[in-house]
Length: 438
Image 1 (tube, rainbow, N blue to C red):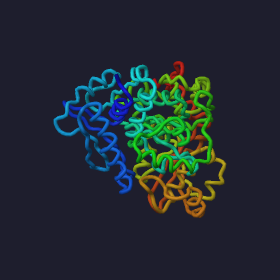
Image 2 (tube, helix red, strand yellow; image 1 turned 60 degrees about the horizontal axis):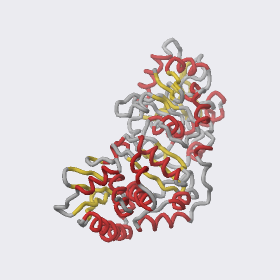
Image 3 (cartoon, helix red, strand yellow; image 1 turned 90 degrees about the horizontal axis):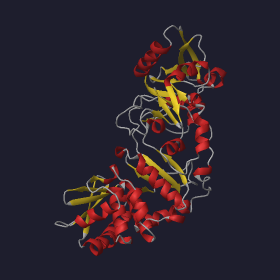
Image 4 (cartoon, rainbow, N blue to C red; image 1 turned 45 degrees about the horizontal axis):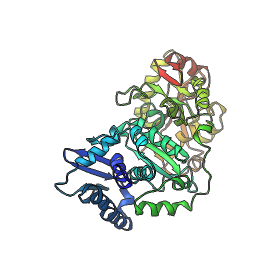
């Protein structure tokens, strides 16, 4: 029988466990939060008292820990027999070798676990995957969230949907999901290589702690501490949620990567709820998803909505685009002030214009991101000169903007107008809720 103590330990393993031969480790990826001296003492106490005691009570061995590379690693003491743990994992339909999250499936665990064992199992997953970093919030500090972070390397879309729908069934209201897919992590730039940023299931803190809890005191303490900052209300439950007009997605070069599961490979998604619906979540607002899918042409861009970089690289990308789609056009290079660009109606359909200008003008960058207020950067440089390269006669075609002072350039495009629609239409089919590239 899997009691609440075993359920918690098996949840820890499901969330962060690696099993090889006759040993296991449980990784707690606590990074900066777990390196704070106050938190370190609380985490160590959690492991050496509560978690180790659970292993001793249920599996007859003690557990200890080590710290390395900003990660805490829970592991059994030497010569421990873990076969009983493997048997219990098998009973819940969970893997017994490797990094469990790669293949974890919650179907059987959800069916078998009852009562307090359910929350204990989930608490184990929360303790390994839940992040309370201040950066997790919806727009401002009044909307702090718990973010359940699943590594993108797992590509386990099924686990993410299963976990989120289970928590929804138990009363939580999901604030947002980010899926490890280029349509979410690189919707604007089809050539951005570092899009593999993992999965995030986010809940506003009050919704989360009303229905669930962390078992580790170190995490419970911080969860209760940030609750007081929440001033905004939960969103409408997912099944009744409206989808506002989504931003278009560019067709990424990795959309057909074999590293993506077949369920999401070579398919375009316009919203996180679109993923949920295609992947079978019972709480997805199907009619809302159908409404955006039927208008798919409005939300697909063959071209970069915004691509940023060194001028030589961007000019080369722009030349490739023009040779393929605009080979019979004539081009012009016109110099504008920033103020002229922001007030010119011809530029207003390019929705990423402001973000692109901020990149071109920002005195300091974080990678390719501007630092500071986008509006202030643009306003303080309204007399700066920007060169614009564009086709002479085709409205709404992709254009290139160049700052000769710092040699930065961007490509921006718009889905508005006949040009993008004409190029996009032959490229995809719609099958039920799926937008499949040909």
